[in-house]
Image 1 (tube, rainbow, N blue to C red):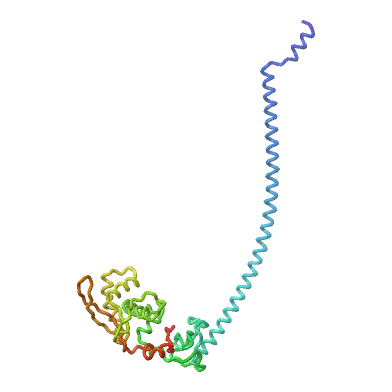
Image 2 (tube, one colour):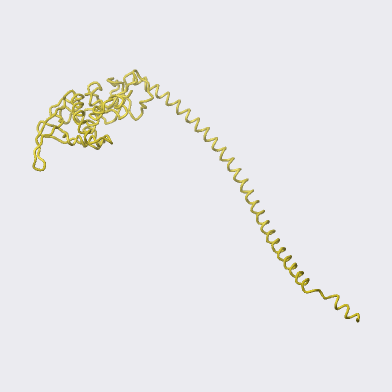
Length: 298
């Protein structure tokens, strides 16, 4: 065999080894490309981490600033509350002394639950100037501010006294439901702010009246969950309570009416035109000038 023939045979590789070498080269190229991508992604993540670290530092500094500001504001608020509480205590003490001396103080300036007066009782009333005042019951104002007061709390009928109380005070003063309903019925008649008023204007010798049937529906509107049967029973009890609390200034009248061609007799709770009701007597001019007495607190 000649030397040239021998060298040619030595340099040639088998086909399967050539293919394996090419596959490895391709695999190496792929791995290098993947590594480059991961290096790029890692660099990106490191930059993001640096950004987040910087942001975290900034936020921590901001939180520290806000905590410091919050502490400062809380200290200021606490100091202001202490000062306000001390001022309110001083004002309440002064108001209590003035009220016990007979002063009449504007209601909007008095916290009736804080002032400390004898027996813990305050009376709310409206004077000629239209403003509401507080006073110790039945005390005269030495300064005569706001006009005169012709009605003291004790001059009012029991039904008027209850009608001027708020719901909580009325509940504590009267345990019986018919009594409370009678007071609310009177309040609906005299206080335009109540809204649900079953009273109607009368004529001749009757100033106002409310029919038993209308009273039944009114009771069901006031007390949720009451059946029609029970409301019908309550009508008589409420009328009896109204008569008693008004010291029989109110009255009951029966009137024959016609409905659907049939006649029936229905009771009416009436306010007689000549009823001696405190605060409602006299001429219309007197009624306009007459101050109204509010509820007693305490």
